[in-house]
Image (cartoon, rainbow, N blue to C red; front, side):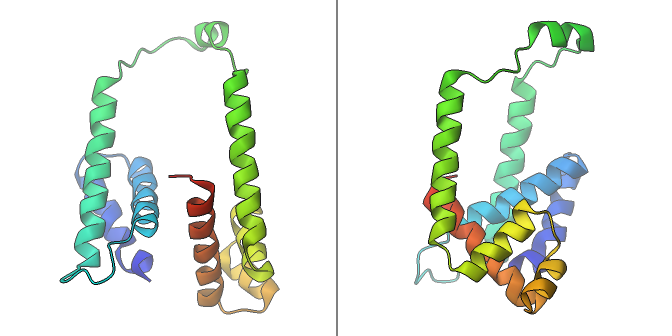
Length: 161
């Protein structure tokens, strides 16, 4: 519900701060992911979700701009990049990726069947929420809630943040 209500405004505010549309869209998703994983403590008085979302997005935008300023961008011809780059992952990367994949698989196994299936169809299978809802015989809003629940569970249990 918060995403539908505020995502477009957050994305526009990031674009106004000088970010590209693609980066703003990525940071908007990152904002909601961060907020979902670290909700304010219960009993927080005067909690304003909209202000909290905009503050998180502003901080992410500033961090992104700082990183871009620090990175020296050198425009090399594609031939040189192909010569000097090694696409083979390091052994450490392979081990870390396999461990991460195992944690994600374990987190998915913990989910109820319908929730897991909705998540896999949408996030892995690339199907729209409406398509998933139709196949599972659920409303779009209920399907979205299942995918959201699964996503949050996987992020928390697999330690993705």
